[in-house]
Amino acid sequence: MAQALLPVRFCLALVAKMQWKSTWRKKRTARSDRATQMLKLTIAIDGPAGSGKSSLAKRVALLLGYLYLDSGAMYRALALKALRKQISFDDFVALDKLARATHIELQPPTSAQEAAGSKNCVFLDGEEVTQAIRTPEVAQGASRLATIAGVREILVAEQQRAGAGGGVVMEGRDIGTVVFPLADLKIFLEASPEVRADRRWKEHQEKGETMTLAQVVEEVHERDRRDRERKVSPLVRASDAVLVDNTAMDVEQTARLVVMLARERERELSKAAAREA
Ligand code: CDP
Ligand code: CDP
Image (cartoon, rainbow, N blue to C red; front, side):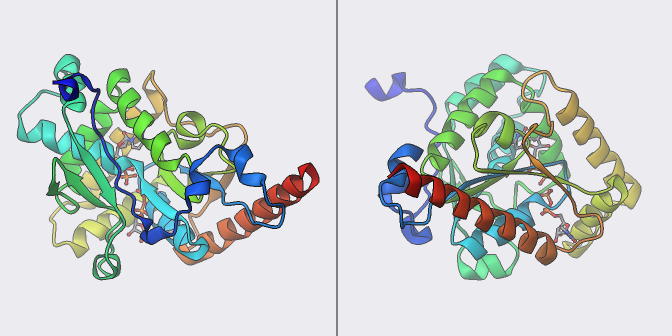
């Protein structure tokens, strides 16, 4: 019975595989107890659709030995459930209720899944939906339910819990502004709308999907507009975020730049911790 009273169990099973240390789970201040130890950062990456957030976050996490978290996958998984249950995206009350009764789990991909380009493995009420959530219909649904304050509250709380220990690269739309406003390093990733749409279109083509470039441009444009204009946690660059325009950069070049910024920040924080010790 007590369980029924609990708020949603969006559980991110983020496994020890990624070498989390329990000390990193405690508050930041507790992490500076040994001055010689390099601090692990919380890195927030935000930006519009197709700007390269997931590819960048995944690569940076790998290079730094950090945990990668795709917050958008949570919005997508909930949207998939709403679509399956034929809940209207205008029915805010039903969507809020749905969020409270849904269990979403993100796990690091296996090496085979990683090689196939998977981001986090996503489980919706125990069912793997990693591929099923990567459709334009689900993307549109996600951006519609992402306008609902109650839904965001639930997901944000879970994202904050998952990243509380540091040593994490989380990407989305509001990570540097709402989820981790005190993140150690914030990146706002941009690319021209044409390049972003083209990147998405190529992905659809590789999957054998028959969307035209014009349809992809429209889908990306509509989602961007909704994400930027919504009242709750709109997509905006945090004032202390580093703006990185990767229109003419590949994933590796962008990742190297961000890793360099992260290393610099790690050194600054370690020095500050040493002074305090
Ligand atoms: O997560 P987001 O929607 O911001 O973008 P993504 O899924 O990381 O990237 C969309 C596509 O663009 C992927 O196929 C990436 O490989 C590609 N991409 C690229 O070609 N060059 C970049 N600098 C970044 C991403
Ligand atoms: O990969 P892509 O950039 O196309 O989208 P995504 O990151 O998977 O996010 C799907 C949708 O979820 C976005 O269009 C946003 O409306 C919403 N979202 C959000 O509002 N806040 C986040 N932190 C992440 C995603």
